[in-house]
Image 1 (cartoon, rainbow, N blue to C red):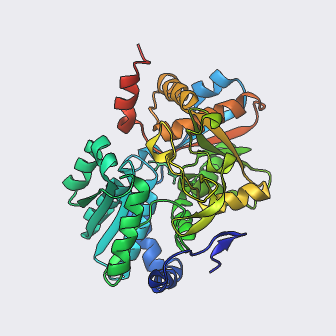
Image 2 (spheres, rainbow, N blue to C red):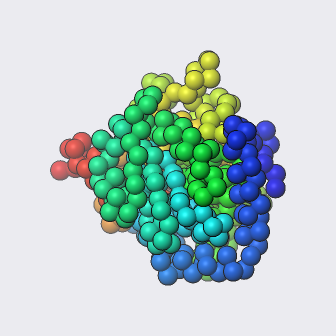
Length: 390
Ligand SMILES: *Cc1c(COP(=O)(O)O)cnc(C)c1O
């Protein structure tokens, strides 16, 4: 399997982890063509996860924009409330198939940790989650969710006590425990084979869009829009359409308080090529290669890197990437709630903002599909505290 997307990707890890990654690649290559494995995944997706998720024609949002027809891919209706389900279920089933009884993962805001705890519970595996001490303090309810589902949470007190420190600790754990432990990575980044594997598990989103839109409109979309943190829901949306050159693809990155302020997570828009978490890609770093802290109102977009396939698609100009500010995302969060009765995750609100902007200038017989990566319940306190809704 090719470990690179153009110059991006690769496997920049300590040698001690290389055999584990080779093992994983070997197992995955067999599993992805094994009807038994695919049948199991399909069954969990359907009966436990609630797939397929609806592709909903947003009539009132379409009228509001006055241009292209807007469809919403409802990943917010997946079990757990987000697309993260697709990835954790796939990888947890792979872990079980490999005979590994212990899952480890790192988490920033706790969403991936929660999803991992969920998949571990349903398959009867152990989960241990690494989380920075400062994140633990900010995300008490997600920590409680993980514990409730039986996971152990390790508070990381080294470094800045945030996501990148949790990543370091999880990797340290794995280098001493690979025999019986599976490292469950949360997005389409990290060392090969994770970017490919996570993309494949998330591609269920794009495959369903294709079939559902064929049934609804008898054709392909003109534009796909998704938010980009590490890039997994976006690459899952885009990938099944890469060969269809008539389909435009737009990724919405977090421009935070504005690209000029330095407080953002727009690694594709203004990042530089470097190595993070075992993978070469665009990322936010200083002149010495030290990683910058990322910022976004949406906790899931707050990642200083991006999956390597997006960097490749950007260079090829096959996909475009735009920044959406905290303020614009907040406006779309409220608009979608009021116009369609759907409260999106703040991450997804970035895609809604970019999608609405585009739809407005497109013609009425064109079709835009926006992936709603998750639901907004987790963000209610953040928005409530801003006092922006009467
Ligand atoms: C984690 C998360 C994201 C960002 O992750 P990607 O890998 O970029 O998809 C986006 N939306 C929601 C709801 C999330 O939980």
